[in-house]
Amino acid sequence: MAKNRVAPLTSKSLTLPQLKLTAALIAARMRNHLQNSLREMNIVYWPDSQIVLHWLSNKKLLKMFVSNRIFEICELCSAFTWKNFPTHDNPADLQIRELDASSFTINALWKFGSSWVCNREAWSCWKPHQMSVRSDERYGLSLWMQ
Image 1 (cartoon, helix red, strand yellow):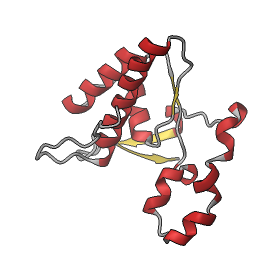
Image 2 (cartoon, one colour; image 1 turned 120 degrees about the vertical axis):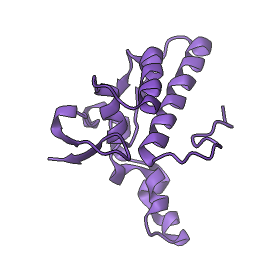
Image 3 (tube, helix red, strand yellow; image 1 turned 45 degrees about the vertical axis):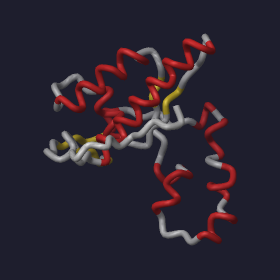
């Protein structure tokens, strides 16, 4: 499992939303593998991509790359919960912000993670109808908040 790659080694370049969808598929496959070993598990998926969440809740015809992965994800984990992990609370996104190495040692988000993660009442609830959707050839669609 540790050797899984999100980005394929092919010459075709994938968009960031497609890479995040591939990561969601890997998470679904991993859950399926662990479910067979550990039995009963309560899983909540936390992607930080609202485009991926919209693709998962979309009933429209999508491009082949996206629709094949969405189909497999739905087959593997249709009964499990998908919630949005806000970018500003994601410690993994600190690396793309302009922080120097010394800032990481004092950054509470980096050290301890988001405080609300352990509190179920504070979990965000992503609702597709709160988003505006616009078609875009590069991604299949684009999203922005209303």
